[in-house]
Image (tube, rainbow, N blue to C red; front, side):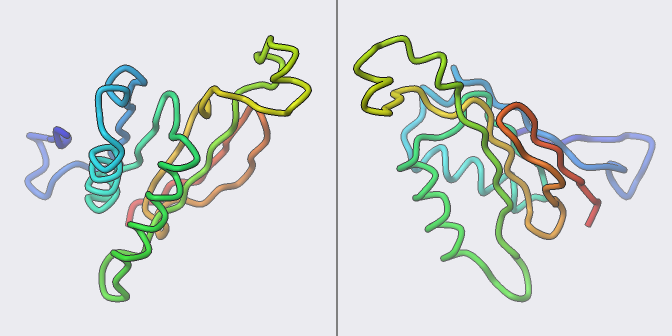
Length: 133
C-alpha cells in the first residue's frame, strides 16, 4: 500500500496512517494475500480498517500467522476488533432458526498491539485509542 508522505517534514509523517480497504478489493484476493496485506500494513505501524471484515476462517489464519511472526524485539502482534452484521439482516426463516449468518463481519479494525487500545465495543460502535509509537 502507498505510504503517507509529508514533504514539509524530513523525518516523515507526523501521525498514524489509516488504510481503509474496500470489500471490493478484498473480494479479489485469496486468503493469504489478504493476510499478508494486512500484516504488512500493521508491521509498518498502520491501522487497517476492512469495510467488510474477514470470514471466521480468514480471521483464524490471520491470528495464527500473527502469532508466528511475533518477535519480542520487534513485532508485538495485532489488536483486532470486529462487529458482526445485524442478525435482523438475515431474512431467511431457516437462517434465523438455525442461527446461521452467511454474511461476513461489517467492519474490522486491525492495528499494532502496542499502538491501539480498544476503549469500547458493542454491536454498532468500536471506539479505540491510537497512539503514535
